[in-house]
Image 1 (tube, rainbow, N blue to C red):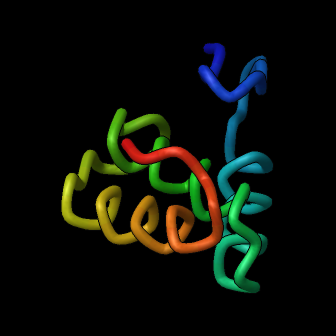
Image 2: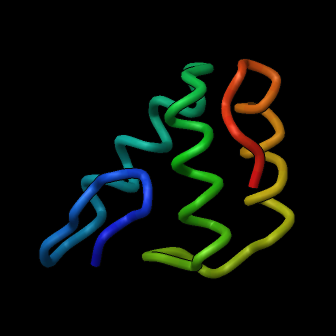
Length: 67
């Protein structure tokens, strides 16, 4: 699978999900944007538009593009 943000995942994507989550919870805008994308697409997690929106909103407050 390939994420639109430039990450290519081969096989187990749990490493990328964990990385996105750690960065997002630490306040990193890229991590928040990426985690929002993962929830929006349901890639490796249950699709959740509410969580996607919340994470993307946090990233937009720091200058990232909106969903």
